[in-house]
Image 1 (cartoon, rainbow, N blue to C red):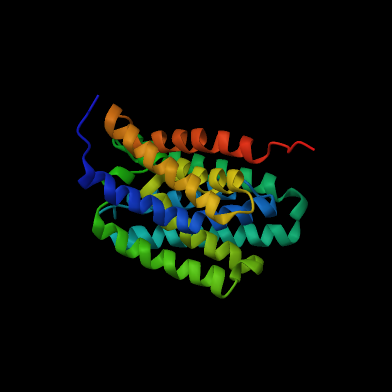
Image 2: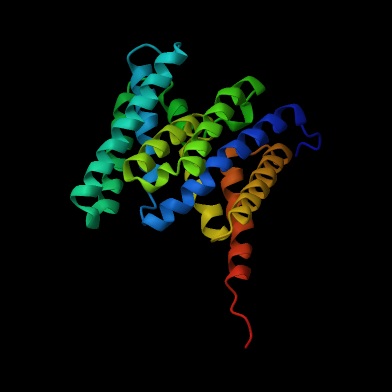
Length: 248
C-alpha cells in the first residue's frame, strides 16, 4: 500500500476525467433516450481499430497520423451506424453489437504478430489516464468546449447525423486517454444513476473518478479499472435511493 499520494500525477488525471465527464454525461443521457446503449463501445472500438491500423502500418511515432486514423475510423463507423438506423431502426442495437465484435476481432488480428500487441490491446481497453499530463489536457479541453457548444448551443443532438458525428469526435478523443471500458462507464453509469438531473450525473461521475484515482494510488491498482469500479459503487446506492418510492 502506498500511503504517499502523488498529487502531481493524480491532479491532471482527475481534471482529464472531469473533461471527459463534461461531454459524456449529456451524451450518455441521449444514448439512453435513444435506446442504443452499446454504441459507445462500438464507436470506441472502431476508433481504437483506426489507431491500431496506423501503428500496424509503421506510423506509431506520428501523432497526427494516429489521430487521423482514429477520427477517420470513428467518423466512418458513425456514418455507417447512422445509415443503418435510418434503414432498419428496429435492429440497430444488434447492428451496433456486431460492429463492436467485428472491430474488436479486426484489432486482434492486426496486433497478432506484434510483440507488443498485448500491451497495445490493454491500453486500448483500460486507457492510460494516470499518465495524462497538463499538455494533454489543452486539446481535450478545446474539443470538449466545442462539442458542448454544438450540443447545448446549436442543439445538434436533435439531428440524427449531428448526434452521431459529435459522438464519434468526442469518443475518439476520450478513448485514447481513458480506454474503452472507462468511456462506456463514463457515458452510461452517471447518466443512468443521475436520471433527469444533469448535475447529479456530474456529481456521481466526479466522485467515482476521485475515489478510483485515490484507490489506484493507495493500493497500486490499474487506474482505469479502479475508476470503473468506483463509478459503479458510487452510482448503485445513489440510484437505489433516488428510485425509492415515497410513502403515501
